[in-house]
Length: 115
Length: 113
Image 1 (cartoon, each protein chain N blue to C red):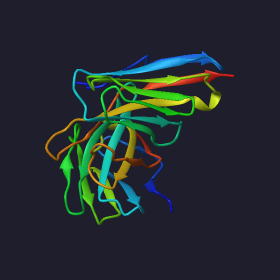
Image 2 (cartoon, each protein chain N blue to C red):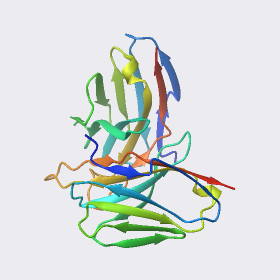
Image 3 (tube, helix red, strand yellow):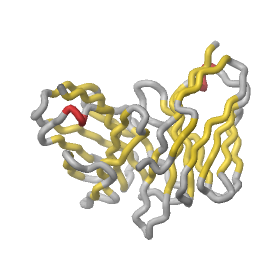
């Protein structure tokens, strides 16, 4: 039982390049999330998927797209990377959308540097 | 706009000392969570508080939810080096089935042996 896994762990891109961050969970969770973490900013929600087949924008969606490939997998795509997208990206999953007692489980993160 | 402000942003204290970190907002939360994040890893949930005024204890950690459900505190007694990490509060605002978790700015805690 690996929980939430993310690939790659590290990535360096040049401005304008594209890439896809992969995320998978083996807990049979319905909801999945992508966050970015920047110093002094906490975690900010980029996109989320309440259930298989649905995706919605979070707080900072510009420059990103997502795909909920199936119940297990949720990918994040940068079509044309910019230096402002240098960050640590976390994928998370939960049984359902946040309510009073819902717990989110996080992956180990992908560290992205855009030059 | 950051809904949840944490203070202090950084805290470095000696092993054995006590400390308190704060999480404040002008918004009312239906619940509030505290996570701890270690270097190179994702956040891990420590506790969820739901009721205004609620106090929960987890060994040497005491969590309190403000009476008005706008703020929370985390108190650590006799800090240990293993307590070192980034502490994040996160709140849920009721939004008619469209609830999201909003994270605070974080407190980076270092316990010096």
